Image 1 (cartoon, rainbow, N blue to C red):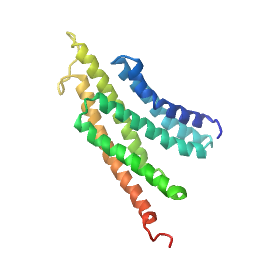
Image 2 (cartoon, rainbow, N blue to C red):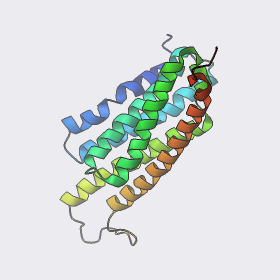
Image 3 (cartoon, rainbow, N blue to C red):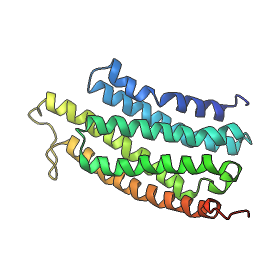
Image 4 (cartoon, rainbow, N blue to C red):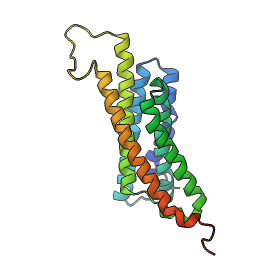
Amino acid sequence: MRWTLPNILTVLRLAAAPLVPLMFFFLSRPFADFAALALFLVAAATDWFDGYLARAWGQESRFGAAMDPIADKAMVIIAVVVITGYSGMNPWLILPSTVILFREVFVSGLREFLGDKARLLKVTKLAKWKTTAQMVAIAVLFLGTGLNYYEVGHPPLVGETSLPWSDNWSDMATQGGLLLIWVAAVLTAITGWDYFTKARPFLRDDHGA
């Protein structure tokens, strides 16, 4: 592989994935939540920049094409696991998270089984929107967990801004994050079905006979 800037950004994003739970190991809350949020936002930004720079500078590579979706999946899966654990196992979060995790494992299995034919499962525009929706939802949920921990330990001060449609800022962030992750789960399920449909002809016993 060539150590181009797009490839370096992809490797850094892949390396950042396991750092998300480590924030909660080394830092106290809510600093861990906000540090994880900042790390996740930076990693999400590199997801756009590495692809853009690779195309703009003519530095697209097989390494980048292989590692980019892996880095995305690692960031999303690890972050979803962390948020689910720190959300008190909220069933409204567990269900869409299960859909997301199942789809990622399912599609990865299809790609591995198809081998050279996996080129048929190229990333679609809808899949890119799915990834964007997942990352935005996760970022908002991290914000919600951090604000919730802060507000529980620090009651509102006199004169602090309140929200007419919610008890506090953390509720608004959490509710918004839950809505977004349900949207992401729907997109995730649709793209998973699309990949399965494309792979079905190669799953028949009589294929190639």
